[in-house]
Amino acid sequence: ITEFIILGFSSSEKVQVILFCAFLATYLVTVVGNLLILVTVLVDRSLHTPMYFFLGNLSFLELWYATNLAPRLLSGMVTKDNTVSFTGCMVQCNLFGALAVAECLLLTVMSYDRYVAICQPLHYMALMDSKVCTLLAAGSWASSFLGTSIIVGLLSNFRFSGPNEIDHFFCDITSLIKLSCSVTRLFESMVFAFSAAVSLIPFLLILLVAGSWYVCIIATILRIPSTAGKKKAFSTCSSHLIVVTLFYGTLITVYMLPNTGALKAPSKVFSVFYTVLTPLINPLVYSLRNKDVKEAVWRTLQGNLIVEAS
Image (cartoon, rainbow, N blue to C red; front, side, top):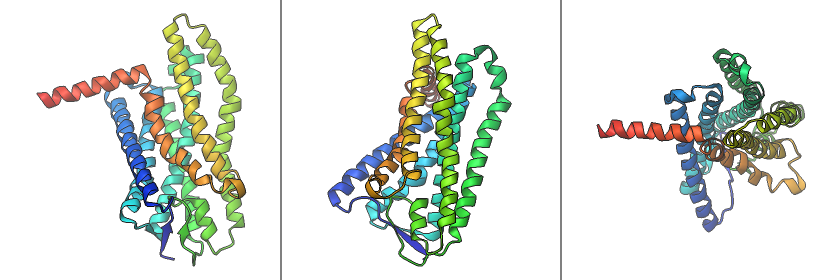
């Protein structure tokens, strides 16, 4: 096989139009929102702190995450050309996997950052100095791309001789495994183990280990004298939990549970949550409801307007 056919969603013309408008609007908002946050974090010196350093990394990741999937999906809806080359499919699969893994790791790192900031504020800058933050971010990026490249590299050497229709809206690794003519039982076990290591384990860490973190966080928040301080701390933690629950919940449902029976049909819908909605929610919920970020964004926009006017 030299190319694959991505089946996408419903073949109904009305449904295609609705989906195209929805995905286009979501993609544009995702790009503008995350790009605005990324530029603001880079330009505004008041945001040069560990929390916003990781937030900038997350926004940069979400930009590539959405751009890796949305343009090809939208193009196929318009041109009705749903074919993708073998190499192009493997590249998309590799990028998607690496970015998804990197997001899992970054969200875990951000949980630790919030714990240190609220429960150990006096030691925060010592524990989360620039060197530690850089190592944590670089480790998340490097390990995700290395692990996924090995997995997809092995997959690309499998034999594909037909059929070539991918029952998904992007080159998903589980769909590609089903199309392979090679014996894939050992490889499927490897993919399952890798998925568990990078999604289920971090999620359980956030739920179990970070559960104690949030008990400490809540106890610390309740000792904050000002109502505004309590509200800000609760807002930061609740935003993180919203993103974590949505992203990990749908990701684990698709990749950790058997994709058969009652779960087979909704798996494509669940995929929309972690591929389309999570990059959108990041700027809308996680960042733009943060007072510091909103003020910094406004200062950045005002600065650009002044420069253009002069």
